Every structure is written in structure tokens, then in C-alpha cells.
Length: 148
Image 1: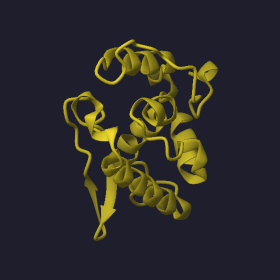
Image 2: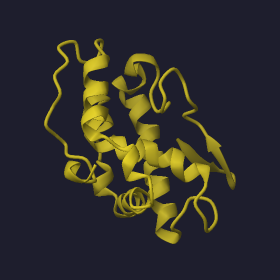
Image 3: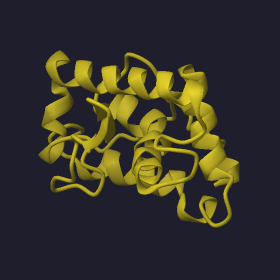
């Protein structure tokens, strides 16, 4: 996930062994408040930043926006519950929710999203976190599944 520090954008949650990098191997990073707190703080910061602008860096879509979006689109249906990041949903952040929908609405982006696959992949592949592979019904994705 990208974040602003001293006027410079950084990628603190750089890709680890998973494709998104918001958590460490097998999700262990989000098993305690020490890991969730910084994540929520970064989301709060992004929420404030997006109150002033449509995009994270300047007035155009950049890689930083895409990298943040890949986290946001999966956050409510997976990270919120599966990785115990249940302080707030992206749906509870007006600016992050609008940002997520705005990017989802761009040509070709929606074609890359399959919420059923996202949810089942995470809940069924992390046996240490979810040993029975139970896939919950909620919370619902920010974008209705019928649109993905």
C-alpha cells in the first residue's frame, strides 16, 4: 500500500510473497492490533488525501492509484474479516469508496474483478487462518457482485 511521508509517496507494504503485499506470509501480520493499527492509519490518511483530489499523486491516474485500488477492492469482502482488519470497511470511508468506484468504472477495470474468485481464493487457501475453508457471505463487496 502506498502512503505519503514527508511529501513523498512510499510503498510501505511492498509485495511480499502474496500478490498484494498488505499482509505477511499466511496473513500472520494482521493477527494483532500492532499490525491493524498502522493499516487503518494509512487508510485514514488516504481518506483525507482523497477529500482534496481525485487521485493520490497529482491530477491523473498513476501506478500509486492502481496499487491502492487492488487493496481497496478486496478489503471489504476479504481483508476486513479474513485478516481481522475489522475496524472499518472501505464502504465506511466516503472518499475511498468513491475512489474505488471511480477506478472500477474506468474502461477495462471491471473486467479484471471476480469477487467470487477473490473471496474463495483467500478463504480457502490460507489453512492456518481458516482451517475449515469456510467462506462467509459477508461483508459484501463495495461493488455489488452482480456487477463484477
